[in-house]
Image (tube, rainbow, N blue to C red; front, side, top):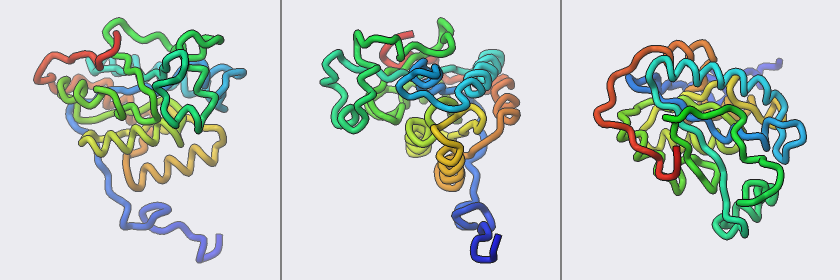
Amino acid sequence: MTSHEKEEPGGPHGSAFSGRVGWGRRPALLVIDLVRAYTEPDGPFALRGAGTVVETTAALVEAARSGGHPVLWTAVRYAADLSDGGLFVRKVPALRAFAAGADGGWGEQALVPGHADVIVSKHYASAFFGTSLASTLYTAGVDTLVIAGVSTSGCVRATAMDALNHGFRPQVVREACADRTPALHENNLADLDAKYADVVGTAEALRHLGRPGAAASRTPVEAGVER
């Protein structure tokens, strides 16, 4: 590596972007779009390394439940005619796989949510946009959002940015996310870690999720769609 290629102190963006949001007292785990469309080899959004993501996420879910922390899942769902998909379904035509009545069952979760878990239906990349996710987390007393799922450059990134914007501490678990190439995955993690979230390893996330947290000030409510 030459001198002009050397990475700046504090990461690829330099020391100006070297802060950490850290962990609060009450984490929740959000599993983003971990459905068959991404995890099956013949799925319309099939990803490399999806098996590792599923295994790591399963461990995170178990830890969150053992620590008594909320577990939430997202799923993209559209009307049969895609009339609620706006320009997003025009930009990404393969999203029609998530329309009501579509063949293939691609919107089915790769892991089975628990009966007390919250499932958030969304139409766009961010789990916050057009949903009541923020209200659900606030009511549950959550201050830290642990993020797993797919894809790193898409819905994970958009959700992590919006988590920060809403006042939550986003913790993106490196091994619990994936993208279409290693470069896309790593470059987006580097950018997230510099500007919008803390990117953490599985061991750190398991340690925090496995600890009993501060009691929520109120009883958690649903995200407005289903359990």
